Image (tube, rainbow, N blue to C red; front, side, top):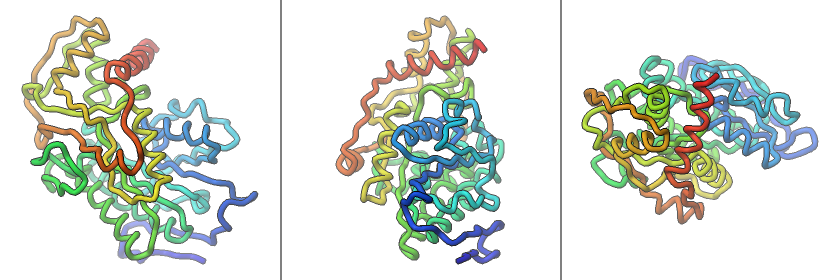
Length: 340
């Protein structure tokens, strides 16, 4: 069987192939992680390997790093493919049982440098994976984001809140791309019965965040360790919720194997101001860096905190790692990175 969506539907068509029977000696359980060389993706790959899965990563390395996969390269159940989800997908993905779609830059500094590619990654990439899943019967977990809520007028944010998003602002390539990806997932689910799972991931941090990659945790830690001023945008009273990577992974894998499509918020409901985070980083690093205030970027959310009641009920999950404990692990990693 070969399915090919209309060329008019998107710039690149997904080419699909006859699918072998599900779990068998010649078709072992395979999880595909797009964006698997990234921060969250690489941790997810390790967890899946530990759980007995065969894992294939597809990553164009625009923001990911093969160094994140050093523990897995050479493992008999792990394959790395260098590729772009907006291009023709490799045949090796056609036998997957699970697709974890994490293929999109998550840092504003990164996605605003390549807004066209960021938008297409969310739209074309998600569309191609869903088309593969339609043919194979695989399940797709879409890593969506708290940014679908924009600069919210509801607090904390519940999954039925429709958001307050600027569709033409500098963050729209990411915000609206992720919103449309959710739309595609539910369209394939309703029209073609594709099994989907939608995770709205709030700020995640931990080891493998790259120093100064544009996210507030890594920026503050790198600046503190270098003795540079910590860059605080606006008055620093804007809030975020920070979820340690191990907690995020536990929720993602539980959601994938659950019977709920979502969307579900995945994040820590403890709310912290940016100033509070800066003070914690200075204390935990022992840095004497000062704070340097700069103008607040356009469309930067003033408050961000998830309501995880629905997630807790469906997944029997709550984050466990305290912020200071997670920051210590992240500081240890970034300190090592800066020294080498």
